[in-house]
Length: 536
Image (cartoon, rainbow, N blue to C red):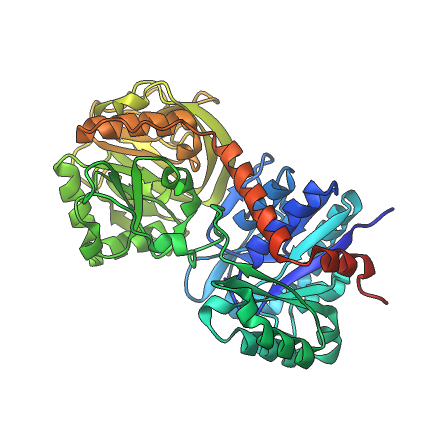
């Protein structure tokens, strides 16, 4: 059985640019005619994705798979850690939830997962010509070296030559690279075949004296100096620079001002990448009351901890401000956890998020009950009759995925708080166990979508809307309907811009990334490293 050649990208720290470089190399190899796949043994991220099989994986490897031109597979990311607190994470293995573990518990346990990691890697290696492996954080975390399965531990298991990437934008890149190498064992140092400097601004010739010293002190070539590349590609997680942006909004009357609330446990912020790329929309991320202002639309995004983040909204004064904006006519839209927050009550009888019951924001007539089993599925739907401010969305086709731990139920004629789920399901997952799906939905709120499986999803009431469907705004018809509705709501002309296909847009960005990698990396050296591999 043939086995793929392999190369690995490790970094001197988190956010050094490993994920982007892996995606770029994947695209280059694919353009050069090779069958290539990405791999990351263990990923820690709140951004996840549901495959066609209904399995969950890290979104960074989805991006890299797209760069390869192939369908994402959980084999590309056999272990996903989704933080649920400062001390622990939900552990997902081969796309299925294993359970929640505290950091020390997982550290002691993770070597038991090596067979699953290697089975996933070997399966990919048998089907492809090249595997590009991504590390995590830094290989020089000496307190974590003993049980490492994602950096040098993975490099050894896969016999992968390593490119070490440093981030010059944060300063001290030569110390980063030299220090990282010096903290490794001799056999690990030998596995590093070249260094890469990332995020450089300016003339690379200025770096040459430093590069020469780096070559001399490490005995390793510099494979490239990558500038900040002007590409629009999904970022991996909350370190993303896009979450700090403040694009033209309410101060510019020609722009629609959309404020996405940057929740502490924000997940799947990639839901808004398509909005950011849409002419006429100004998308900004808000984490303080003083930043909120008077946007035309507020979006409550997904979260890994709905109840804790709702408490944070209250403590920061953001809940009261959002409710005031909604009362004044601003459009409010919730996705997944954000949708759950907009309801009247959240119940956690099974202790999924610590237990208890809490009052929701009361902007939609739904109640949510958490369950231990995670719902994961890809789904299509149609917005049949949208009422209120977003009526222009009527008839739009939506496609995405659901990933959540609870069900939401319409409250038939309920008023006030403390209502239980006495209506049809509002989650697209069937009827409540305590009520028939034939129970009529209150006139106060109606489903937002009808899914292809015949179930309703989401809820709408006046200018407040919610849905469990991640990727809702990726649909061209949804974006165009949203833009039309928002321009009408703000009484400004619809911008004259050609609609764009999100999938095609992504392909163009991957090609731009590959062009940047070819232009700034020594690809002859990279291919030589691939060919020589690790002996023994």
